[in-house]
Length: 311
Image (tube, rainbow, N blue to C red; front, top):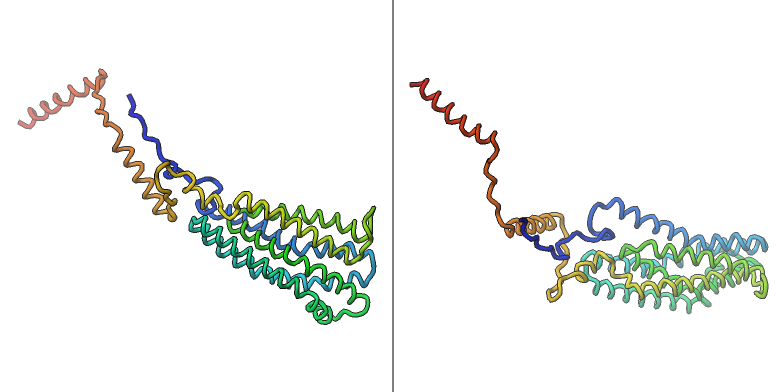
């Protein structure tokens, strides 16, 4: 009769498969880095898409939008000021398995990002003419670039807000969600470009300004969608940071998962030795077969014959 086994607690079981803090790093690195690379390219692809549409209007329109790419890179770099800091703070809290600190860092990053976006948007009427002059654009191309950049400056809060939300998801290991939202907004931008640049159906033909408006609307919708996901799913709290606390035993304080391989090995050895000590000991079965009895009788006879020979 076998002894009943003592059930192991959830804390002593293995971590979940999607724990980015446990196991080898090859798979998580590829899984996290590839969507990040595609996301960086997608942010620049919005302007490339606008260039592809406005090249059918005139050479001045193409020159205005293509020259504005440098300003767009600078705007994304300014947004990274808030997003990179948020990524560092939230990722450190996720690594320490502290969801409360991660939520605090996410909230602080959102506040800083929105303040930065609003400040830059309000400075657009004064900054845009200086930028157009610095780009060396004049005449029709300069006027088109001024109208294009003025709209993009007002849409900058949505851009920097999306970058901060994207960094929160990346810090928690959820890099696929921002990439999916970017793909959605990119497709929406293409549709709105066609409607607002050329005036399809009831929409007016706005030309270069229509391309900027389409990008601003698409980015604003993407920001709202990703913000709703982050709030609804608590994206700053990754499975790696919340797993020990949400699966702790009732009535006991949550214990964090060991952070080193040696700690995991020592806990596993203590658990196995405790289970072995609790199990009842079974006596070693006696030999009852005929072969065992014959071999047991043969050994004394061999011993007696050897004794007699020596005497």
